[in-house]
Length: 321
Image (cartoon, rainbow, N blue to C red):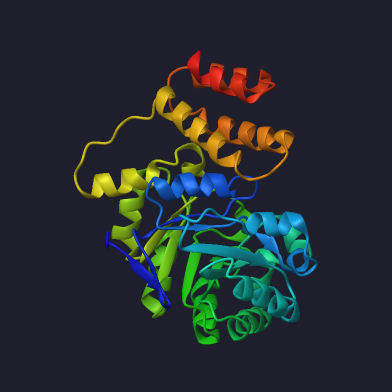
C-alpha cells in the first residue's frame, strides 16, 4: 500500500476512502473515520436540485469539521444543466476539495429519475454530465460507477474511459452491477481491468470487510486506493487497522469498550452540529446499532439500544454488555 495518491492537485493519504452512505456518513461520523486513518471521506449523496434550492438538509450534508480535509461532496442528478450551478455553489463556498458524481447508486427510486447508476445506461449522456461538472468546477471531479446496469452489459471499462476523456481526475468502481444491489460477490477482476485501461487513479470498492480484505484488493487489482463502506460503519477503526496490518503490527480485537468509546466520541461531535436534540439522538441510535457488532454480547446490546430513550441510556447499553 502506497502512502498516498493524488486526485488532481489534491493529495490523499493514506489511500483509504470512506464511502458515501445515506444516513451514516454525517459530519461527526466522517470526522471519527478521519481520526482513525481515513485519507478521504465522502458526504452522503446530495441532490443537485436541493442544493440549488438552498435546502437546509442538502447543505447540512455538506458541513464538515475543520480537521476533515480533504473532503469530497457526492452529487446526484440527471441533467447536465443542473450540475453547473451546483458545482459553482460548492466551489464558491469552498465546501469541499473534491466533487464526486454518483453514477453508481442502485436504489430504484434514484434510478427512476435517471440518476445514480441509471446514468450508465446511456454513456453519451453520462459523458455530458461529467463534462458539465468538470467545466463548471475549479475543483477536481471524480466519478463513482458500477460495472453497469445489469450483467447483460459490462460497461465498467468504457464508462471509466469516458469519464477520463471528459476530465474526471479519478474513478471509483463498485465491482457489482446495479441490478445486484449489494448481493452476490464483488468482481475485483473488473477493478483490475479498469486500472489497466485508464491513466487516472482507480479506487476499488466492494466486499472489503476487514483490513486483510483491503490489502488483498490492493494486491489483486493494482488499484490506487480502496473505498470502505459498511465495514467502516460497524468499525470506524478499520482504516487504522489496514495501516497497522500493512506494517506487520498486531490488530486489536473490537471490544464493547472500544465501541462504547467511539459512540461517546460521536455523541460529543454531533452535539456541536446545532441539530435538535431529537435529531441528534435519532442519528446516534443508527450509529449505535452499527457499532454494536463484532463483540460478545452484541445482540443483547442491540436490544438495549432499541429500548433506549436518551443518550445516557444509549451509552449504558454498551456498559451492560
